[in-house]
Amino acid sequence: MTFITFEGIDGAGKSSHIEAAAAHLRARGADVLLTREPGGTPLAEALRELFLHRPMDALTEALLVFAARRDHLHTVILPALAAGRTVLCDRFTDATFAYQGGGRGFDTGVLSQLEAWVQQGRQPDLTLWFDVPPAVAAQRRAAARAADRLEAEDLAFFERVRAAYAERAAASGGRMVRIDADRPLEGVRGQVLAAVGGCERTR
Figure 1 (tube, rainbow, N blue to C red):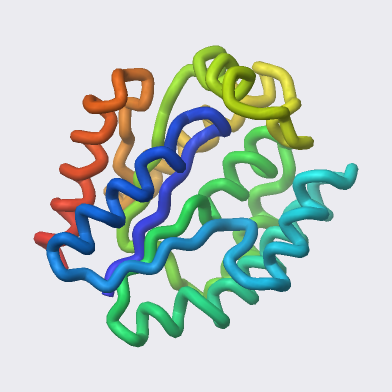
Figure 2: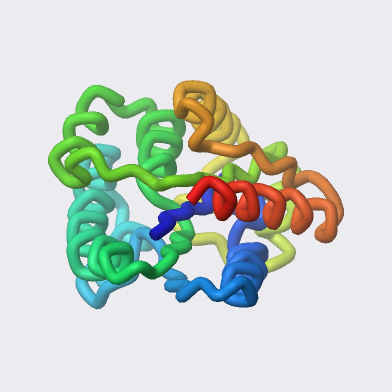
């Protein structure tokens, strides 16, 4: 069983590569489940809509995403892993530390306590962190879609989010692999498949 998460600021391109990673693993015989956070279950998807579109403070944001994560873990992720499936998830707890902890400046001690309660020590086996300058990500978002509540934040917010991802990666003990996402598509794709292949070899 393998649990792989995809992280990065909005516009980093992670969602463009998760399908390719899934196809790569399926071609090698893995039974792959694709999911996302916030979301992945009917309850968590309903909480996602509130999170992305209703005004709220940082603590409320954190409580919503961890409530969604609790349901997602116990309803989808843990049963899939127990059945021997490979789970690829678009965002997980690193995003909460980056966005609410870094971007909002919220107390990471509170986030760590919520993480402990909800996850009970369960972490991804591998996290791909798509790192890109916030100005580049902003251009990509503007060309792709209308902004939701978080995507509408300014560049300073995303600089803080990026810095928090870097801190989280440095403390991850090798779990988080940095993907240079400010490169042409094929260059990014090669990094992703190399990282996923490395995870396969360590199973």
